Image: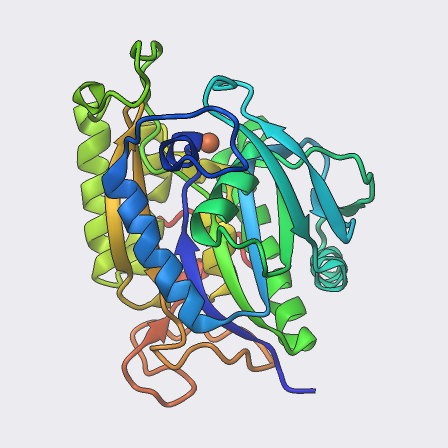
Length: 338
Ligand SMILES: [Fe+2]
Protein backbone atom coordinates (compact mmCIF):
# COMPACT_ATOMS: atom_id res chain seq x y z
CA UNK A 1 0.00 0.00 0.00
CA UNK A 2 1.23 3.51 -0.77
CA UNK A 3 2.23 5.57 2.23
CA UNK A 4 -0.23 8.14 3.43
CA UNK A 5 0.13 11.87 3.01
CA UNK A 6 -0.70 15.01 4.95
CA UNK A 7 -1.69 17.40 2.19
CA UNK A 8 -2.27 20.49 4.33
CA UNK A 9 -2.99 21.73 7.79
CA UNK A 10 -5.55 24.47 8.48
CA UNK A 11 -6.05 26.76 11.42
CA UNK A 12 -9.85 26.65 11.37
CA UNK A 13 -11.51 28.29 14.39
CA UNK A 14 -15.03 27.50 15.49
CA UNK A 15 -17.10 30.52 16.58
CA UNK A 16 -20.68 29.30 16.03
CA UNK A 17 -21.50 32.86 15.00
CA UNK A 18 -20.04 32.08 11.57
CA UNK A 19 -22.56 29.31 10.99
CA UNK A 20 -25.32 31.54 12.35
CA UNK A 21 -24.26 34.33 9.99
CA UNK A 22 -24.40 31.99 7.00
CA UNK A 23 -27.93 30.64 7.65
CA UNK A 24 -27.46 27.05 6.46
CA UNK A 25 -30.58 24.92 6.56
CA UNK A 26 -29.13 22.67 9.32
CA UNK A 27 -29.04 25.55 11.83
CA UNK A 28 -32.35 26.59 13.41
CA UNK A 29 -31.72 30.27 14.31
CA UNK A 30 -31.91 32.79 11.47
CA UNK A 31 -29.65 35.83 11.09
CA UNK A 32 -29.24 38.87 8.91
CA UNK A 33 -25.63 37.92 8.19
CA UNK A 34 -22.60 39.17 10.06
CA UNK A 35 -18.87 38.35 10.39
CA UNK A 36 -18.56 38.45 6.58
CA UNK A 37 -14.76 38.90 6.40
CA UNK A 38 -14.27 35.67 8.36
CA UNK A 39 -16.91 33.84 6.35
CA UNK A 40 -15.24 34.98 3.13
CA UNK A 41 -11.95 33.72 4.56
CA UNK A 42 -13.58 30.32 5.00
CA UNK A 43 -14.85 30.48 1.41
CA UNK A 44 -11.24 30.68 0.25
CA UNK A 45 -10.24 27.85 2.57
CA UNK A 46 -13.13 25.75 1.24
CA UNK A 47 -11.93 26.26 -2.32
CA UNK A 48 -8.41 25.22 -1.40
CA UNK A 49 -9.64 22.12 0.43
CA UNK A 50 -11.87 21.16 -2.50
CA UNK A 51 -8.87 21.15 -4.82
CA UNK A 52 -6.97 18.81 -2.50
CA UNK A 53 -9.66 16.09 -2.60
CA UNK A 54 -8.55 14.46 0.65
CA UNK A 55 -9.72 11.01 1.77
CA UNK A 56 -10.15 12.13 5.36
CA UNK A 57 -10.27 15.22 7.58
CA UNK A 58 -8.73 14.97 11.05
CA UNK A 59 -9.92 17.49 13.60
CA UNK A 60 -9.03 18.45 17.17
CA UNK A 61 -11.19 20.99 18.98
CA UNK A 62 -11.24 22.34 22.56
CA UNK A 63 -14.89 21.59 23.26
CA UNK A 64 -14.88 17.85 23.59
CA UNK A 65 -12.93 17.87 26.82
CA UNK A 66 -11.73 14.60 28.32
CA UNK A 67 -10.09 14.54 31.71
CA UNK A 68 -8.37 11.17 31.33
CA UNK A 69 -6.63 10.50 28.05
CA UNK A 70 -7.24 11.36 24.41
CA UNK A 71 -10.51 10.03 23.00
CA UNK A 72 -11.49 9.35 19.37
CA UNK A 73 -14.96 9.14 17.85
CA UNK A 74 -15.49 5.45 17.12
CA UNK A 75 -18.99 5.21 15.63
CA UNK A 76 -19.13 5.10 11.84
CA UNK A 77 -22.32 7.14 11.30
CA UNK A 78 -23.27 9.86 13.75
CA UNK A 79 -26.15 12.29 13.71
CA UNK A 80 -28.06 14.51 16.09
CA UNK A 81 -28.40 18.10 17.18
CA UNK A 82 -25.38 20.03 18.39
CA UNK A 83 -26.11 23.01 20.63
CA UNK A 84 -23.62 25.60 21.81
CA UNK A 85 -24.07 25.77 25.59
CA UNK A 86 -23.01 29.45 25.69
CA UNK A 87 -24.88 30.55 22.57
CA UNK A 88 -27.93 28.28 22.23
CA UNK A 89 -29.66 31.30 20.68
CA UNK A 90 -27.22 31.12 17.73
CA UNK A 91 -26.32 27.49 17.25
CA UNK A 92 -28.71 24.53 17.21
CA UNK A 93 -27.36 22.49 14.33
CA UNK A 94 -28.62 19.18 12.94
CA UNK A 95 -25.52 17.22 11.98
CA UNK A 96 -24.91 13.96 10.16
CA UNK A 97 -21.37 12.77 9.59
CA UNK A 98 -19.24 9.74 8.76
CA UNK A 99 -16.28 8.74 10.90
CA UNK A 100 -13.21 6.96 9.53
CA UNK A 101 -13.16 4.52 12.42
CA UNK A 102 -10.24 2.51 11.04
CA UNK A 103 -7.95 5.54 10.97
CA UNK A 104 -9.27 6.76 14.34
CA UNK A 105 -8.37 3.40 15.89
CA UNK A 106 -4.95 3.51 14.28
CA UNK A 107 -4.35 7.01 15.71
CA UNK A 108 -5.40 5.77 19.15
CA UNK A 109 -3.09 2.77 18.85
CA UNK A 110 -0.10 4.82 17.70
CA UNK A 111 -0.69 7.30 20.51
CA UNK A 112 -0.77 4.45 23.01
CA UNK A 113 2.56 3.18 21.69
CA UNK A 114 4.02 6.60 22.48
CA UNK A 115 2.83 6.37 26.07
CA UNK A 116 -0.46 8.28 25.89
CA UNK A 117 -3.73 7.11 27.39
CA UNK A 118 -6.16 6.77 24.47
CA UNK A 119 -9.73 5.53 24.18
CA UNK A 120 -12.34 4.99 21.47
CA UNK A 121 -15.73 6.64 22.01
CA UNK A 122 -18.35 4.00 21.06
CA UNK A 123 -21.58 5.59 22.31
CA UNK A 124 -23.86 5.93 19.24
CA UNK A 125 -25.91 8.64 20.99
CA UNK A 126 -22.91 10.83 21.76
CA UNK A 127 -23.56 14.47 20.94
CA UNK A 128 -20.64 15.77 18.90
CA UNK A 129 -19.41 19.10 20.27
CA UNK A 130 -20.18 22.41 18.60
CA UNK A 131 -16.50 23.19 17.97
CA UNK A 132 -16.11 20.14 15.78
CA UNK A 133 -19.38 20.76 13.99
CA UNK A 134 -18.71 24.46 13.37
CA UNK A 135 -15.22 23.94 11.98
CA UNK A 136 -16.34 21.06 9.75
CA UNK A 137 -19.31 23.02 8.44
CA UNK A 138 -17.20 26.08 7.72
CA UNK A 139 -14.45 24.15 5.91
CA UNK A 140 -16.61 21.55 4.11
CA UNK A 141 -20.36 22.22 4.25
CA UNK A 142 -21.04 19.27 1.93
CA UNK A 143 -20.19 16.82 4.75
CA UNK A 144 -18.97 14.29 2.18
CA UNK A 145 -15.50 13.52 3.55
CA UNK A 146 -15.07 11.06 6.47
CA UNK A 147 -13.53 12.48 9.60
CA UNK A 148 -11.35 11.54 12.54
CA UNK A 149 -12.31 13.54 15.62
CA UNK A 150 -10.01 13.79 18.63
CA UNK A 151 -10.96 15.05 22.06
CA UNK A 152 -9.10 17.79 23.90
CA UNK A 153 -7.40 16.16 26.82
CA UNK A 154 -7.42 18.65 29.64
CA UNK A 155 -3.77 18.27 30.61
CA UNK A 156 -2.72 21.84 29.64
CA UNK A 157 -5.17 23.11 32.28
CA UNK A 158 -5.05 20.60 35.13
CA UNK A 159 -1.29 20.12 34.80
CA UNK A 160 0.40 23.02 33.02
CA UNK A 161 1.02 24.36 29.53
CA UNK A 162 4.38 22.67 29.14
CA UNK A 163 3.21 19.19 30.10
CA UNK A 164 -0.02 19.58 28.17
CA UNK A 165 1.80 20.64 25.01
CA UNK A 166 4.13 17.66 25.46
CA UNK A 167 1.04 15.40 25.35
CA UNK A 168 -0.23 17.13 22.21
CA UNK A 169 3.17 16.80 20.57
CA UNK A 170 3.08 13.04 21.13
CA UNK A 171 -0.51 12.90 19.94
CA UNK A 172 0.54 14.61 16.71
CA UNK A 173 3.43 12.21 16.19
CA UNK A 174 1.10 9.24 16.68
CA UNK A 175 -1.43 10.76 14.29
CA UNK A 176 1.27 11.19 11.67
CA UNK A 177 2.37 7.58 11.95
CA UNK A 178 -1.21 6.32 11.70
CA UNK A 179 -1.80 8.39 8.55
CA UNK A 180 1.47 7.17 7.05
CA UNK A 181 0.52 3.53 7.51
CA UNK A 182 -3.06 4.09 6.32
CA UNK A 183 -2.05 5.11 2.80
CA UNK A 184 -4.68 7.85 2.95
CA UNK A 185 -4.46 11.46 1.84
CA UNK A 186 -5.29 13.54 4.89
CA UNK A 187 -5.96 17.14 5.83
CA UNK A 188 -5.56 18.36 9.43
CA UNK A 189 -7.82 20.91 11.10
CA UNK A 190 -6.74 22.75 14.24
CA UNK A 191 -9.91 24.33 15.55
CA UNK A 192 -8.51 27.15 17.67
CA UNK A 193 -9.12 30.82 18.17
CA UNK A 194 -6.05 32.97 18.78
CA UNK A 195 -6.51 35.71 21.42
CA UNK A 196 -9.51 34.72 23.47
CA UNK A 197 -10.44 37.79 25.51
CA UNK A 198 -14.14 38.20 24.86
CA UNK A 199 -17.10 40.39 25.73
CA UNK A 200 -19.43 39.22 28.44
CA UNK A 201 -22.57 40.74 26.99
CA UNK A 202 -24.05 40.13 23.60
CA UNK A 203 -25.51 43.01 21.52
CA UNK A 204 -29.30 43.07 21.17
CA UNK A 205 -28.76 42.02 17.56
CA UNK A 206 -25.85 39.53 17.75
CA UNK A 207 -24.89 40.15 14.12
CA UNK A 208 -24.75 43.95 14.53
CA UNK A 209 -21.21 44.40 13.27
CA UNK A 210 -21.00 47.98 14.55
CA UNK A 211 -20.47 46.29 17.95
CA UNK A 212 -17.72 43.91 16.83
CA UNK A 213 -14.06 44.72 17.50
CA UNK A 214 -11.10 43.26 19.42
CA UNK A 215 -11.95 43.04 23.10
CA UNK A 216 -8.38 43.70 24.10
CA UNK A 217 -5.69 45.69 22.29
CA UNK A 218 -2.84 43.62 23.74
CA UNK A 219 -4.56 40.48 22.51
CA UNK A 220 -4.94 42.01 19.06
CA UNK A 221 -1.27 42.96 18.92
CA UNK A 222 -0.31 39.43 19.94
CA UNK A 223 -2.45 38.01 17.14
CA UNK A 224 -0.80 40.26 14.56
CA UNK A 225 2.66 39.33 15.82
CA UNK A 226 1.94 35.59 15.66
CA UNK A 227 0.20 35.77 12.26
CA UNK A 228 3.14 37.69 10.81
CA UNK A 229 5.53 34.98 12.01
CA UNK A 230 3.28 32.27 10.59
CA UNK A 231 3.04 34.06 7.25
CA UNK A 232 6.83 34.13 7.11
CA UNK A 233 7.14 30.45 7.98
CA UNK A 234 8.87 31.16 11.29
CA UNK A 235 7.46 28.14 13.07
CA UNK A 236 10.32 27.84 15.51
CA UNK A 237 9.74 31.40 16.67
CA UNK A 238 5.99 30.81 16.94
CA UNK A 239 6.51 27.87 19.27
CA UNK A 240 9.12 29.72 21.28
CA UNK A 241 6.57 32.46 21.95
CA UNK A 242 3.57 30.17 22.38
CA UNK A 243 3.58 29.97 26.23
CA UNK A 244 3.79 33.76 26.55
CA UNK A 245 1.13 34.20 23.88
CA UNK A 246 -1.14 31.77 25.74
CA UNK A 247 -0.66 33.61 29.03
CA UNK A 248 -0.94 37.18 27.79
CA UNK A 249 -3.61 36.74 25.11
CA UNK A 250 -5.58 34.00 26.89
CA UNK A 251 -5.07 32.16 23.61
CA UNK A 252 -7.23 29.13 22.89
CA UNK A 253 -4.26 27.36 21.29
CA UNK A 254 -3.56 26.27 24.88
CA UNK A 255 -6.12 23.51 24.42
CA UNK A 256 -3.75 21.67 22.11
CA UNK A 257 -5.08 21.49 18.55
CA UNK A 258 -2.44 23.83 17.16
CA UNK A 259 0.46 21.87 18.70
CA UNK A 260 -1.09 18.53 17.71
CA UNK A 261 -1.32 19.68 14.09
CA UNK A 262 2.21 21.02 13.95
CA UNK A 263 3.67 17.89 15.53
CA UNK A 264 1.85 15.79 12.93
CA UNK A 265 3.29 18.04 10.19
CA UNK A 266 6.76 17.95 11.85
CA UNK A 267 6.77 21.69 12.52
CA UNK A 268 7.32 22.81 8.91
CA UNK A 269 9.10 26.12 8.41
CA UNK A 270 6.85 27.09 5.50
CA UNK A 271 4.85 30.24 4.93
CA UNK A 272 1.21 29.97 5.91
CA UNK A 273 -1.52 31.22 3.60
CA UNK A 274 -3.69 33.70 5.51
CA UNK A 275 -7.28 33.58 4.24
CA UNK A 276 -8.53 36.15 6.67
CA UNK A 277 -8.73 37.47 10.23
CA UNK A 278 -11.62 38.81 12.23
CA UNK A 279 -13.04 39.09 15.70
CA UNK A 280 -16.07 37.32 17.13
CA UNK A 281 -17.41 38.73 20.40
CA UNK A 282 -13.98 40.28 20.66
CA UNK A 283 -11.86 37.11 20.20
CA UNK A 284 -9.23 36.92 17.45
CA UNK A 285 -9.79 34.38 14.70
CA UNK A 286 -7.52 33.58 11.75
CA UNK A 287 -8.25 31.14 8.95
CA UNK A 288 -4.89 29.90 7.65
CA UNK A 289 -3.38 27.04 5.70
CA UNK A 290 0.04 25.41 5.74
CA UNK A 291 0.07 23.83 2.26
CA UNK A 292 2.51 20.96 2.69
CA UNK A 293 1.64 19.69 -0.79
CA UNK A 294 2.96 22.88 -2.38
CA UNK A 295 6.22 22.61 -0.42
CA UNK A 296 6.79 18.98 -1.37
CA UNK A 297 6.32 17.93 2.26
CA UNK A 298 3.17 15.83 2.04
CA UNK A 299 4.76 12.41 1.84
CA UNK A 300 5.26 10.78 5.19
CA UNK A 301 8.48 8.85 5.14
CA UNK A 302 9.14 6.20 7.76
CA UNK A 303 11.91 6.54 10.27
CA UNK A 304 12.87 9.10 12.88
CA UNK A 305 11.46 12.59 12.62
CA UNK A 306 13.64 14.97 10.69
CA UNK A 307 14.73 17.77 12.93
CA UNK A 308 17.45 19.59 11.05
CA UNK A 309 16.51 23.22 11.51
CA UNK A 310 17.72 25.50 8.80
CA UNK A 311 18.77 22.70 6.48
CA UNK A 312 17.11 21.48 3.31
CA UNK A 313 14.18 19.16 3.80
CA UNK A 314 14.97 15.47 3.43
CA UNK A 315 12.94 15.19 0.25
CA UNK A 316 15.45 17.42 -1.47
CA UNK A 317 12.95 20.12 -2.32
CA UNK A 318 15.45 22.58 -0.90
CA UNK A 319 12.92 25.29 -0.14
CA UNK A 320 11.34 24.11 3.05
CA UNK A 321 12.65 23.05 6.39
CA UNK A 322 11.33 21.58 9.58
CA UNK A 323 12.54 21.69 13.09
CA UNK A 324 12.00 19.67 16.20
CA UNK A 325 10.92 21.48 19.35
CA UNK A 326 13.64 19.86 21.43
CA UNK A 327 16.31 22.26 20.18
CA UNK A 328 14.35 25.46 20.62
CA UNK A 329 16.18 27.20 23.45
CA UNK A 330 13.52 28.41 25.81
CA UNK A 331 10.83 26.86 23.62
CA UNK A 332 7.59 25.48 24.89
CA UNK A 333 8.51 21.90 24.37
CA UNK A 334 12.17 22.08 25.23
CA UNK A 335 13.23 18.79 26.70
CA UNK A 336 9.81 17.21 26.38
CA UNK A 337 10.43 15.26 23.23
CA UNK A 338 12.27 11.96 23.74
FE1 LIG B 1 -13.77 27.69 21.58
